[in-house]
Length: 267
Image (cartoon, rainbow, N blue to C red; front, side, top):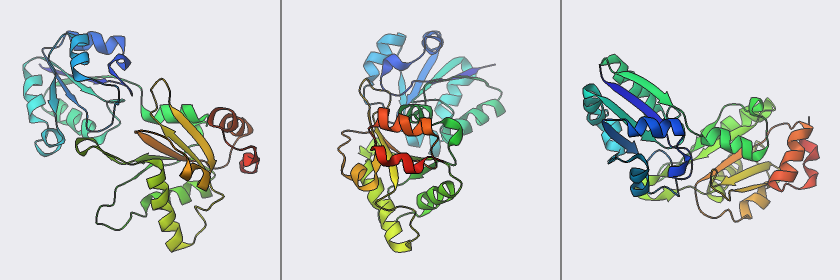
């Protein structure tokens, strides 16, 4: 029986891989990786190959989604195959689908977890994990109307007093990464059309850039302040806080440089 091991690479560069993940990769017969589901700004494939002492076959979105990952499944049937992915392996539905197909083909699978943007963003903000509601992605709209889904999710969570984690769209293969100010402008355009007071100039927002790096940027403030703040390079992520515990409010002021007036959001 073959084996397919999913290994999370973490958030920033090749040094984020765990010792267990490194050990598994070094003992593999074949090593594959994809880098399109997230941006690891410090990662260099050559450095990763030197670290694991093996050649890495880089897969594209087409390889995994349009060709159903046949290339990696073929190798996994022959022997131990490792699949390196950004963040935590099972966050992306593409990887879950690949794992299901592998198991159905008689290929044993295992997962070596890595740091996830979900836990990292929450940790950097100082907000409490159990107080987050449904998360959502703010997508590029292209020639389509701006999606109202993120706005509606934020509204639903706010009404329940919950925080909202907003992933910002990225197209790594096209070198396109949504920034905080772009996402906020898109969301405000929906507010401007719907007039439901979900997002106003008094809405509290947290923007985070380059989580996992040595110098991530974390800024909390009222909508216009965060809109105008310079976050620097990608990747970016957004949080819309709901009702705050007093410790969360203190964390936003101390760790995310929020104004002291956020006391109004404390439950």
